[in-house]
Length: 57
Image (cartoon, rainbow, N blue to C red):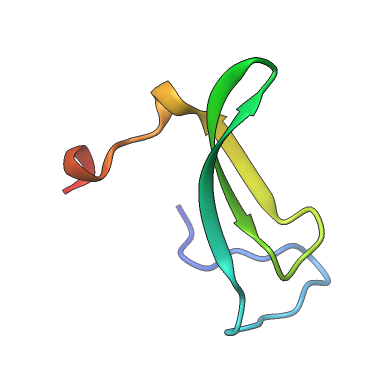
């Protein structure tokens, strides 16, 4: 995994606002991580595939 990956043509911005939430997509809960400073800057995975904080530690 690359620590800092960017799309071609994107700019680096240290002031990005990244948020996370659990939301329903297609009838099942998903963890959504989004950069609210960019259009289409988000990723989602099913809640079951997300690692809990306790498991991550």
